[in-house]
Length: 150
Image 1 (cartoon, rainbow, N blue to C red):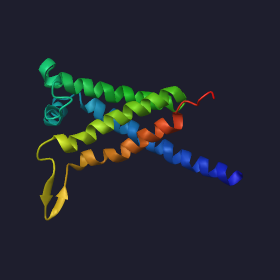
Image 2: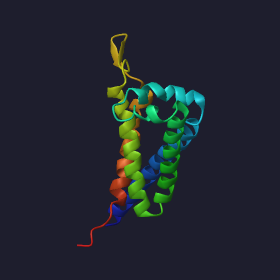
Image 3: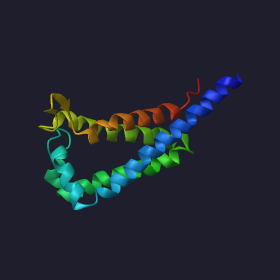
């Protein structure tokens, strides 16, 4: 029985490191979204996305970027709080999953994002890394899923 307990404790450290990595990224990039440079960088991604392009019809490029940045910062804070409060962690994991699924979808909605260089198919790797962040977000959902009162 003690061996199983040690395995859970070992998994916990990796989980915390993963969550703090996601939080760091969300805070850092969330703050960066408030700059004109990042607003311009995400514009082609958002403008070519079937579910997001309409945002530019009602908001400026900078306002859309600010909205995305604010969302990322709020989810990062919720993930930190979620380490103590399971219900917050559950919803923060869902919100993080939505963010990273959205980001990964840019791989399929943005023209010319895939290229062949030296015979190797490559994409913008800053998007591909979000597979790992999605995994941490899903793990947060799984670890904090409400317990049924059956």
